[in-house]
Image (cartoon, rainbow, N blue to C red; front, side, top):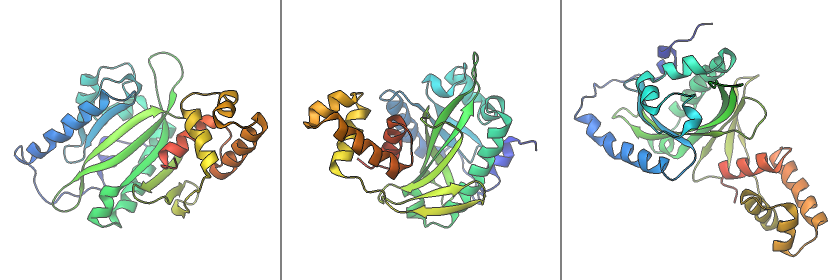
Amino acid sequence: MNINIDDFFEPVHFKDTLNELDYNITKPLVDFARSLSQLTYQSVYLIDYYKKGFLFVSDNPIFLCGRTADEVLKNGYQHYLDNVPEEDLLLLKKINDSGFDFLKNLSEEDRMQHSISYDFHLKQPIGKPILINHKLKPLLLDNSSNLWIALCLVSISSHAKAGNIRIKNEFDKSYFEYDLINNIWSEKPAILLKKREKDILRYSAQGLTMEQIAEMLFVSIDTIKFYKKQIFSKLKVKSITEATAIAIELSLF
């Protein structure tokens, strides 16, 4: 199956024509994205669904695949076609379509409160493709409630393979996962962590070892190991790195 740029924009149907005057409202969003990119190691960029391209691309290297930010900005969605392996490109198309199907069933207010997270590979100038985590959040809708501008954050994934598709509401602890086999969204209940489990995740995110965490919490190593097993079971992961990433993504701290 050959995928082209227009395939990613099939779910978006703009009824109104947007002109340069309309685009004045996007300038503060670009300033915000630029400021955000200076405060994080993540790659930051803005998708413009009306012009079918990018509105801003930061110079953080994770997303650039050896190009400059200006080159990626100019290439727009061609950057995906050039640098995402074919198998993952098909995955991105499915994520794109299922994500828009999910959004269209939400009210305008709810659309602005949801974000989607997923993993896919990006080719690199040297070596194997890297697995990245991609988060997307609506920033601006048009007068017909179409998604116009979206904020994207790109970081190295803590998972072992592509997929891991989740949608969450920033004001709700529950979330939705997409089943790639049955092609359906399923709501997942909020994950409840005990205070001690949150402490361990928080200290792990700061880079502390189990021994250091045990000292901080005045407990034994065996106690830390016990709580780690509980955390892994609740989050369905196999490493503290993956557990920390999911806890941050789902705002479990």
